[in-house]
Image (cartoon, helix red, strand yellow):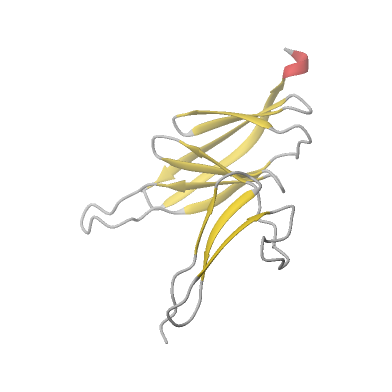
Length: 145
């Protein structure tokens, strides 16, 4: 029997809509809150809280659960017109109990930790369109400005 597709879309940090892989002709549509059980009563696995931050050349992802920052380039192979982007983990920032604010400029993002006031800049450089180099560094604190 052919296996159907699996795809998840995070609508908010708490609500996930999933199309679940199944065999045969039936497929399941599951709606759940990551802090509750699935509506069917089966224990739901919490999804990480990823925040996408788009830029002109790609997209940053911040996992607010563990602080990891990643970047994916939107490179396209000019010969084949196929996606050729790469994704790399570029840094780690401190967690926040109050959340974050984000601003993107070119190949940089600024992340403000609403708990500590820390302002962190994460930046990337695309090398030959095939690799990503970057990092994150705290630049200031809202409390000292």
